[in-house]
Image 1 (cartoon, rainbow, N blue to C red):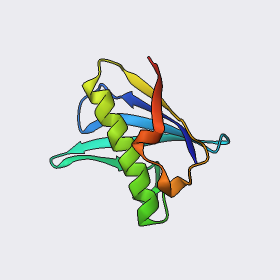
Image 2 (cartoon, rainbow, N blue to C red):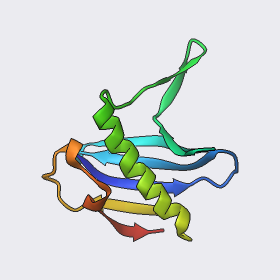
Image 3 (cartoon, rainbow, N blue to C red):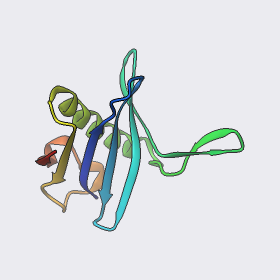
Length: 114
């Protein structure tokens, strides 16, 4: 279960537009999810590490439906951020009993802007 999402703008130009931090189950923080803009829109890049000359994700969803949940949530949140004047937005899940694969953007509410 994703408890909170924090989306922060990146101001140094280029295709990297924002980064995200998630808390999961109240016990795990996942930092450094990148939101990158390409010609056909935004996509997310999970945290990665350079290993033997190649970048490998060190944390990632293991199924297409799980990846879709991450993408849908984060891309909707980054749209909010890009339309706002804020440098970051903080979201909290309003119903912690929802199974992970059933989470949608509508289950979250902005609770703090900074």
